[in-house]
Image (cartoon, rainbow, N blue to C red):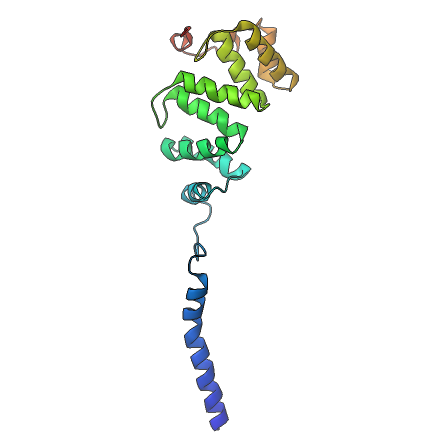
Length: 184
């Protein structure tokens, strides 16, 4: 009987000590029960330098929910890590003044970076910037070259622009024309 009692006491002591041992083993090792599938979690992961295609793509939902500041933070980090889709989103945020003042020059720079990284959408967007002279000095020849590259890369809207004689109104018929007046 006393061996049963001693075994029960030992089991109780071990069970009592387990939470304290688990807590000290996990200290400084991250979240014990982290949030999952939230935009806050994605932002926290990106702040830690953990970018991925899915983390970067979630910025779309964050900005569409009206949280432009966190979306900008996410997209900028992803763009710095080389995710070209995030570069084109940074351009969109800068061009429309979402989460920061409107800055067409900065938007064109993001388009340029995406184009230089080989992204077809970046090539198309930067080609349009150059055709219009929007955010950059106009360069029709270089703009057409980029549009042609985007079309060869399979971007249908670039082929549409070629077919329209490179008239930007063919692909952005509802654009605010005042926005695209030459800046330089």
